[in-house]
Length: 355
Ligand code: SF4
Image (cartoon, rainbow, N blue to C red):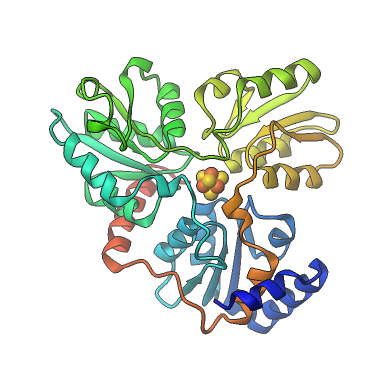
């Protein structure tokens, strides 16, 4: 990538950059499919063919009529997911290959393999389950070992399936989504334990044998920021407000919020509110701002300002640069074996539920 050229394009006034992006889109027509995650800045979502959550976007691109070039405005694991689901003739490009998800990167394949080997000493079957927000390597790891993938919408159904397969779940990489799902599923908090890859034998070796759910110690820095104090503050000054949070927030926030759900659930929840309603949302700030501008007749506010810095690395200038160099830029490539076992895990998820 020519960083000097990218800086020049990033300095363009937004409207000029938007005009040039649209001109590139017109040039490629149906051959191009631009995807934007809901946490992208508003202008990028306005220029995309599809806006949504990572899995929904990958499915849309794979079924798009055309779409030889798929440009994924999101973080790296999302572009990998699109490459896993893409048709053979489609190629996937990512405007910033350095923009990874800090949470996905908290579970490296080497660390997970080492941990899995230690856990193999436990009695009974342990079923690995990874959140969609994980690298392709980790998805494949789970697929190869009889496990599956879950999204924040279908995590409960995935738990039900996993407990039919084995004695306990090894959940990667988000501790909070894992705990929130386990509690909702009715697991005793005593039977939910954490595996910390930085500690000897995970840190709690005496608890793993009896545990029902072993949570990888990973977290989303964006959602971990929300606190009980944020909720108390809103309750005090906006007693009629509804508070909705994403399940990647810590369990103590979920317990006192009015509703909890995935990015898509939050979007649908807000769509059902009425003019004049007050809604405070505990998730990434760009989604909150985009919803606020979509529904100006209600008060839609952040629970706390929390920006995903790596999502924000995708700029209008980078998108324009990618479109201007579609034929020559490096593609997102997932090695065949990784792709195969990731598909195994994904297909298991799809057989459980329509998502
Ligand atoms: S919001 Fe959290 S989970 Fe999503 S990409 Fe950013 S760091 Fe990763």
